[in-house]
Length: 182
Image (tube, helix red, strand yellow):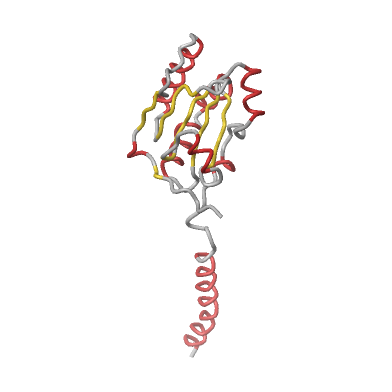
């Protein structure tokens, strides 16, 4: 008789535990947490526009323009493993003007800058001349070398002819589809 009453007294407790676990697991976004790079970054990203070019001219630095999408796994990897490293954060803040463009919010601007995949990075002089465009994931060493070489060439006045130098690995990119225009 005591045994039955013990089991009965635990049923409501078990039911509450099971119900609580189910509610916990059904909480939106709990296990598929959304990633919004601009909420996670330590880099002082700027918007693309006249004020940014004015700052670049004043400081005599090229723009480092990142075109990304929060849903892109390669963008997230590039952002976390490369851009957010202390060496890259220091370089971007001391020798470049970091600019970020969310492809989903500004698809026309991304297209105007030549992006066909995300992530894409475009290096642009303060006068608006494109120095270099690359797409896909680059590790820290690869990006440091690329930025250093581009900085040296630009300081020597070595601008690309009509064609912007471009490189990348499409296998470390996400194709983007512009959101429907209204």
